[in-house]
Length: 364
Image (cartoon, rainbow, N blue to C red; front, side):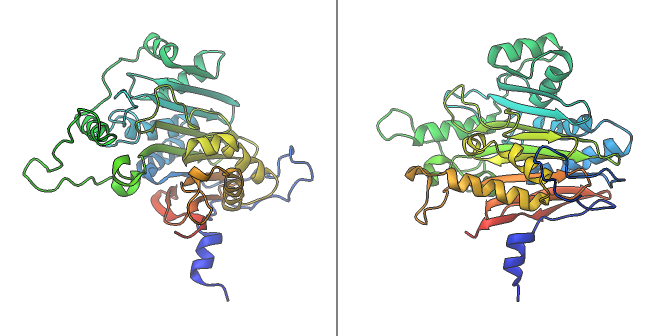
């Protein structure tokens, strides 16, 4: 008899928003395995994409473009100074500078755009969309990306909020006991212990438990016509080496959309996703006939196989980090999966935005 735990491990995150299911698996991996049908619009993404997914569905149900929907959705989080995962208020690099990455893909036009190491612009996802629309390029980086954004009318500003600055100062003070930096007071303004409400979602400061905060948001949507788009946007790994680029702006890694098949995005350790072409792998697995959840799990197994460095493995010989995938296919079936248990993802279908448990490979 299948236990509830076993059921969640292999089946959690499977949803159906379509009139028909997957088509038969193609004998050729390059041939679409999903047939067109009338689809119930669905948005799926990372756990912090609850409001973004609801906004995406509102836009597409109103007749708006799928890419406009997901970008408008994540813009809400990018502009929020209280969110340290992306955009304004994102956690900075080693030098205390916020560097942002994002990619977008538009299924109907097969278009893609991305920016990396972008400084001073709150909404990198919007800039990535403009790269797709107004240039012959896919990826712009660093000062060039910023100059392009300014030429498109974006305003530069300091993205480091006081809250993020305090967290950076504390990390800098704790990273060595041989420098001259002092650890700041950790009490709140009234003398009470300072509590970080994002500790569960982001992980706490590196010096406390060896886990650096990582912040990313992904959102993918399919409309009633079966057209798809996706976006991934991030401030990346906190305290990173300046110039570090993770998976989020890499087409095929942190995001991939094929309008014949489906869309997928990722959060978690970007280096692991890049090495396995993660989101592209998920979409290709769906093309071959896998459900979104099973495709996500299979791509995660590849990460486990690729993780051979002792420093990245725990005492069980398994990855000592997490990666999450979020996927939706052309018929509106969706799913989310992670290496480790306890993750949740956001989904909006039939006007209801909610979080669901992700499937997983291993229990903590």
